[in-house]
Length: 401
Image (tube, rainbow, N blue to C red; front, side):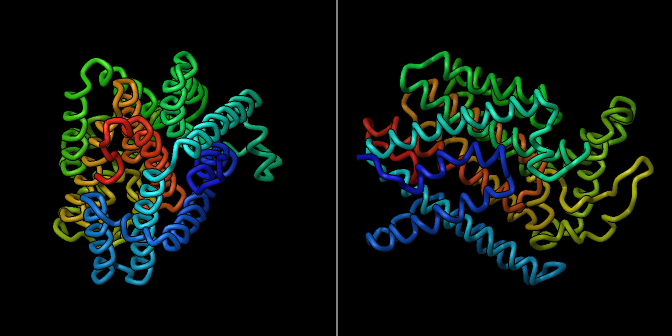
C-alpha cells in the first residue's frame, strides 16, 4: 500500500507551493529533509547518504564557504549563510538517498502526486494570468495594482513551474502518454511568454532547444553541455568585461530593455571586484556589502543591487576562483547525471531541466536566497527520483554519482 513519504510530499507540493507562495519553498525542503533524516537515523542508514563524488564536492564547497567567513566583510552574517548552504547540501544528499531507496509502490504515489501538483499549479497560474494577476493581488493583500511586485512574484512562480515541467514530462512519457508529456514544457513556454519575465522566456526557450538537441545527439549534447556550463562558470568574469560589457549594448538595450543593460553594468562591476580578490573572493554574503555597490547609475539603479543577478559571478565574487572550481565541478556532475536514464527522451528531459535551472541561475536571483536554493535542490531530488525509476533494470545508480 502506498505511503506518504518525504519524497511524495515534495512531489505533490513542489509546483503548487511554487505558484502560490514561492518564498515558502525553503520550508518544503526543510521539513522533508528533517523527516527523512530521522527515518534514516532510525534505520541506521544515515551515513550511506554521504558517499561518492557528489558528497565529497558538497563537503568541500561547504567547508570553503564556512572558512570564507574568516575574511568576509561581515563575518557573522557570512557564517550564517555558509551554514545554511552546508545544511542544504546535507539535506540534498539525504533526500537523494531516499529517492534511491523508494520501492515501486511508493514511486507510483510520487509520480501521481507530481503530475497532479503540476496540473493544479499550471491551471492556477494560467487563470491568474488571464485575470490580470487579480489572484496575486488578493493573495498578498494588494488593493491596487503594483507592477514591480506583480512582475517579481510572477517571475518566481513561472520559474518553479518550469522546473516542475520536466520531471512531470518524464513521468507521463514513461506511462506512454506522449502528447500530455510534450504538453508540459510547451505549456510553460506559453505561460512564460504570456507573462512578464524575460529571463523565464530565455530559460524556457533554452531548455526546449537543449531538449531537441539532446534527442538528436544525446552523447555529444551531454558532453558539450557539461563542458560548456563548467567553462561558462569559470570564464564569466572575463565575459562580463569583454563580450558582455555594457557599452556594446547601449543602443540596443538603452530603451525599454534598460533592465537588461543595468544587469550588464552589475556584471561588469562584479567582475572588477573579482579581479581585486581572484583566489579567495570577498567572503560569503559579501555581495550585499560590496564597496562601491551603492553608486547610482545615470539612468537608474545601483552598481550592485544586493547580488549580481548571476550565480557564477556571485560564487566568484564571494568564494573566488577556488569556489568557482567547486561550482564548475558540481554543475558538470549534475549535467552528466542524465546519462543514468535509459531512454533517449528521458535523458533529453533531464538535460533540459538542467539547462532551465542553469539559465535562471545566471540571469536572475541571488544564489543563496533561501527559496531559490531550496527550489534548485528540490528539483534535483525530483529528477533523481525518476532517473532512479528508469535505470533500475540496468543496475546503475543515478544518485550516488
